[in-house]
Image (cartoon, rainbow, N blue to C red; front, side, top):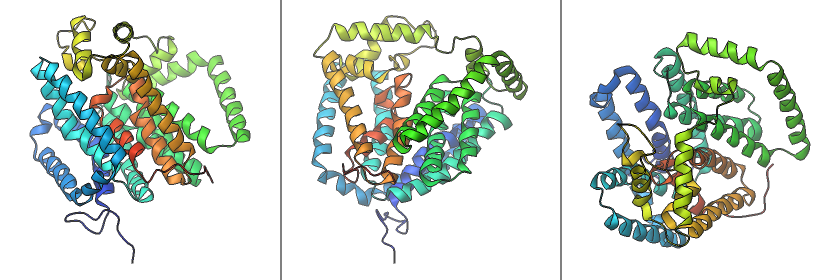
Length: 406
């Protein structure tokens, strides 16, 4: 008889942590689909209420495993230190609206991701669940883009939702030789292009590069480089014709052509507002080499500069769109750099020091969705997938051993 890891409070036949995490990953795509179907009234529907109840039940069901958190001394030290810094930042902040929004996001979303990923015991089983989650995400976002045509301008959520299935299916192709999964990798990339967002495209590409660098031999990497070099040459020679055809196709489907037009007119990376935010963040950090402004002051500072010239701009949306600059603003230039380097170092050793390809795959997937997006968008302090990644880095099952990739 198979022993169930993390039996739930009322669902004991299945791993409660893996079930809960799978549902958390599905939350944004499913609620996004409800928004496409019901519009602004989606949160008032009975379907949304059912999703909320299931969310709460998923967390409650996983409570029996929570006691193991207190056995992880390294994590407890880190968590208490972070709480102390947050507490003093909270006292210093005078913007009640910002504090409310931050607390709501962290308590309702980020902390559950952090604690649950810290309690994972059966990675193979979680990847099994996430595989079906990946199929559902691709299906849901295809409906959003093509059937409901709700992504005719720009949607970061749709794009970022597809990063997980793209990297998950690509890693299963490389690690488990599941050739059929390449189809879903391609579909995922098409949906990312449909979404019109550049961050998901970059995160997906970096995720695939990371997977290849871990799994493939030098000989296979060389073959891959030669193959893509050939494709790149063909792209350069016929760029205008290829991209013009894609733009016409996307326009006929009613989806965003923003990314493809950026490639055609060589302005994909242009973003004056974000460049200004990052420059301001760097200058702020340089003035505070040892002690930063805390978890709230970075947003207030950037908001007061009026860089985002919009009537709808709020303090909540004013951050520098880069995790390393954000850490430097919050902790100080040198401490922020050290924290960022520590995160990268820990990720490196968790990947190269694991003897389980299941563990390696899970780390790669959540580096792709939990860290890479933070290089160009989002804010780490309110981004649930970053907390998921941090939980993995503190999870004792990811021990550093001799690296074996076969």
